[in-house]
Length: 456
Ligand code: ATP
Ligand code: MG
Image 1 (cartoon, rainbow, N blue to C red):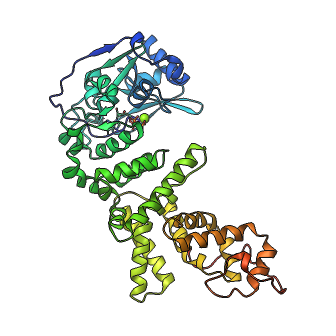
Image 2 (image 1 turned 135 degrees about the vertical axis):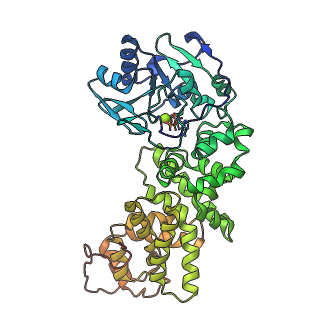
Image 3 (image 1 turned 45 degrees about the horizontal axis):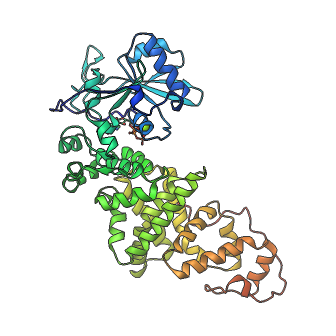
């Protein structure tokens, strides 16, 4: 994506072109998507500059297989639209062209100038937006990018790689270096600090010392970054296949407290190490699901990241005499609201998280009626997966998880009979130990809405 983030005001960035010819780099056209190639060729034939740029060039040079191919050109979005029937223009602050080939969307951005001061003001004269779409040269486009390795251009005209800021060398040395003055670049856009952490973890690169040094002072700028952007960035970091390494890098960078303050606080408390183990197990599980092509949900991720705070606050409320169910409801609502001040949590995910949490105490009530009611709850599966994760925190939870695993594997009637056999305490014996039951009338509870837990 060519993100619409503030530009660098013209800083003293030394621009020196180095051209790496086709026979001296490893980018091969067969690794570029057919859609991107078509756009590159068509632009080139029409007489425009046409380059692959950004993460795609970086990843191709590293031998990876990029998912998205972004293109930079000197054609304006309107020019691009004229060349492609399957093209739509998007973005208001910075116009981009999306060229659509079935499933594939190729993003085409016009070289962006450096005179945008990043203030976000729309400078409108006679209805024309002047400041928002400031086009520039390829050199200006290069220096407004974040890291040197993200500012390499693959030129379709001669298949060379063009490097204006020393990115090719940095790629070789596997180091993320900001273009220009790090402090200034982070002040313009604090999310760049998170991008540094995320990309370093994903690519197994080092962050250049001068790019890491400002974290301590400037990290708190993330406290006021737009929550919607932090939501996107959090998912790219923690829910895109490299969650575990990224989380460790984030904690180590010191920036965790500026994005997930409740998580950082819970990790610093008593029991923090067990909680860290839970988070890491959850992220490892998520990474594995992604590797297997299975679906993952932000709700589960955030439920993990906020669990420490929820559990601690529920304990406190209960100790103060608040009714247990009320405590779970109140605390889960409060914790989500607190976190959402930093990282947006879309409502649909918040509701799922709340249900996953508030169902947790109900796993401990193993009375017959309640067991079946809980199993029929629409959020049972997610809550049960979460319960299994809690096994990391305590042996008691591991046992409880095992009980519920067995319960689900036991046929309905057999389970009903076992439960009817008088396990009427909260500390139920393991299923296998339940004595042979006497027969009782069975009542099906399926389909009946479960009480409580569902919070609007
Ligand atoms: P990924 O592989 O995760 O997609 P990426 O580098 O491609 O990594 P994108 O968010 O897709 O990340 O951004 C594409 C390109 O846009 C980057 O390579 C970089 O050149 C530029 N860019 C993105 N975000 C910023 C930013 N905050 N500041 C400056 N340039 C940025
Ligand atoms: Mg990208």
